[in-house]
Amino acid sequence: MTEKATLLIGNERYEFPLLSGSENEKCIDIGNLRATTGCITMDPGYGNTGSCYSSITYVDGKNGVLRYRGYPIEELAEKIGFVEAAYLILYGELPTISQLNDFRLALAEHAPIHTNLEHHFSGFPKSAPPMAILSAMLNLVSCFHPEVLDVHSEGPGFDRTVALLLSKVRTIAAFSYRMAAGKPLNHPNPNLSYCNNFLHMMFSEPYQEYQPHEVIEKALSLFLVLHADHEQNCSTSTVRVVGSSRANLFSSVSAGVCALWGPLHGGANTAVVKMLEDIRTSGKPLDHYLDRAKDRNDHFRLMGFGHRVYKNFDPRSLILKKRVYDVLNQLQKDDPLLEIALRLEEKTLKDDYFICRNLYPNVDFYSGILLRAIGIPLNMYNVLFAIGRMPGWISNWRELLEHKQRISRPRQIYTGSTSRAFVPAEER
Ligand code: ACO
View (spheres, rainbow, N blue to C red):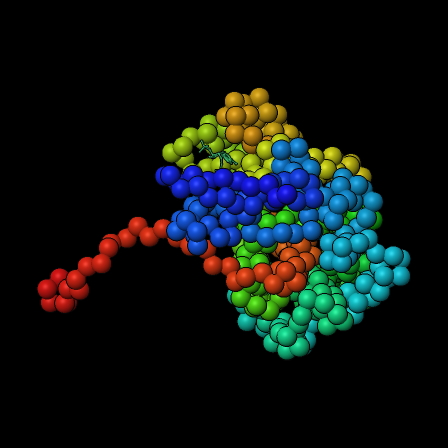
């Protein structure tokens, strides 16, 4: 028998089905709330609102658990690279060796971009933020591949579109960096792995081919694995909202890039490094920054801390913290920002303000230091996040089509003027 939740409004009693997911998370199905009670719910920021059923990623924020398609993130981070993780997220199962090889071949095949599309890069000012270029160019790709405008959620057409998008996002990202740096574009090399091909397009010079470095390739792949999906976060929800109008995949993920750009979301990795740099150069004590973060009248927040869902450690930050050490050691590098980050974390763990509010380092706290270690320029950090998040965005877009999700259209409570008489201009 279905469990019920009871709602009492005045003397009226209403019952709603109580449903649960495969991990026994509970929800009250209020699909007919407005029709039966005349009321809507109010939940700005959607902290209590489920917007969909999904079988892609599971997050248990209380216990610091993250799983893609049932596999714990700790194990995936250890055992597979980004292309394999992307396949898992997109298709629901770990690939066989031949499926993985085919997927890799498809990614290699779709890496180049149309020459006419390439010309658009020269139209951006040198100061253009790479996230703006990425978002614009992802939308533009569809102009050069009109067939993707009519893509469905399954079949060879969908597989081709997936490979096209996952591959081209990396080429566009690298080209946007080269263009902003005033350097010639490097065309993709199909013989290189996904990550090495990106690094080659970023860093090869006409006089010197980029030499792949195993430590750097693995660190980049790990970064992308850890960012590959995170259920209904701000950018993924944006992709779903846009996709719910049956907008094509390219315009939907282009909107996802815009949502990811903000400093409260994907822009936080850049903001963390800027904050740590500021701490280093200002010479001010860490308490100064903690006091500012705690001051309600100061807009300053400790970047890389806090999370809507994790009320315990973000498992991705634990993995990154450990790996940053390894990577710096293997590359025989030292980064003063790591030491500042560690001291900052230590202080927050003893501070009542952070303890009471469950504010722990999130994925962005150590990821910027990892990207610094492997030589990624600061203005590309959130672009790297966008490349990593692409499998999650695509899978969520696909799922919403499969589930025939209704168009997203929240309600509001109007607080403006009630009906009033129009006043002609000369009488105002
Ligand atoms: N520094 C100081 N105080 C903070 C921080 C922080 N980083 N984060 C939250 N708080 C405080 C808030 O001021 C609030 O305090 P109050 O209860 O006294 O009013 C309380 O903790 C709850 O914070 P909310 O903003 O309500 O939490 P929400 O879930 O809406 O926001 C968010 C989550 C956006 C991540 C927030 O913690 C934040 O701004 N963090 C810094 C930016 C950041 O690192 N973003 C990356 C998140 S991970 C990702 O998107 C990939």
